[in-house]
Image (cartoon, rainbow, N blue to C red; front, top):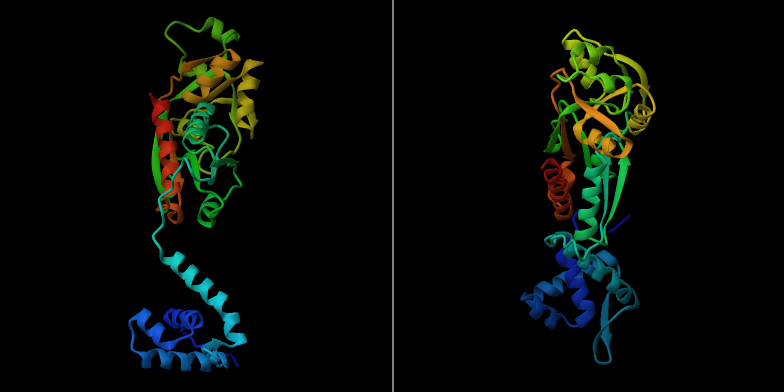
Length: 311
């Protein structure tokens, strides 16, 4: 049967370590500012627990037994680990330290946003790494955050999960995107797109991408007793601008997302005649990472990138 007590006193391990180092009960008593009989009583208890004398008389005083010597390193390791366990956490120093941060985002996030985030992290913490994970319909991001596999999730929801920490990043107005030289773009009236035009034009739309995201556009239209003409659905949101660039299709997306592809693919965006609420983007994180200084720093970089993008 084990001799280990139910509650092992760390102070007793400290006495064991000092006895094995000093090899003298009186010196240990002085170091710990305790009476010598108290240290002698602790030595008796240690002998009882280990089943070994630990210290025996030698030619020039007390010497550790062979078993006593074998306990020196484990006792020191326990004391060191206990001290580190309860020592205050030092602040994250971005320029000096290396961390790997895991962020998840759906692929409809604006490329410029993450370009700015990456540039800031590279500049402020060059030894750190960023891993950007896909956030699809099957991703259990709540569990991944709570398990520590993700540090942060960036996306938009009508109603973000209430039990997670949340910080709003930016609002993105909804616009309509099409090929600049398409038949409709060439004949668009000066007063802009009409609701009838918007609903009857052929649309490319995302399939289920993220729980709580799919349906933001169409659910709102349904509330207004409207329905758009969707002829293509894709689970790959970033494929849609390229499809639009080669066809007569129309894509409804956030203005920041659309602006990037206007510049790169020769597309043109229009103000949507339906009064959609803007896409509202957040960063979400779990309580387990709430107080960590490196995660506070990361969230600050994300917030700053969002403010710069919104200007």
